[in-house]
Image (cartoon, rainbow, N blue to C red):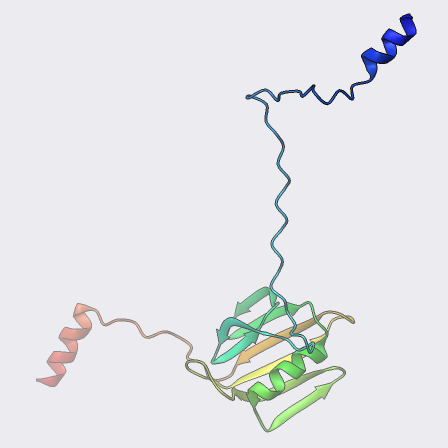
Length: 163
């Protein structure tokens, strides 16, 4: 009989027994899923344009680790070089394209349909392994300095020369 009582006491399948959760108990919530990175390629496997424009040229998505200085911009890209060549080829106007491996150099090019002010540039795409590439954009005719606003002395000197 003692065994029967032990079995009845351990059954725990009584439909009428519900255990209330204390109000001060913190119920863990599932961690939010990380936001998906914007897709780099369209359904046909071609690079998609980004919101970024450089020297009138709309850059593709996925550019990483930008280094810039002296009118030169260097990027790493997580796609094969051939994808970048296919992206930039129709967007650049140049008479000098130098292929090298799966990459290419577009020398003294200008954006075909510029967004904003367009400058001549060299666009160099090189392979960095089977699934990575590097991109160098060197502006060849960009202004070297932004004009500064005239000071009061500059204006006074200008008006003296007019008199």
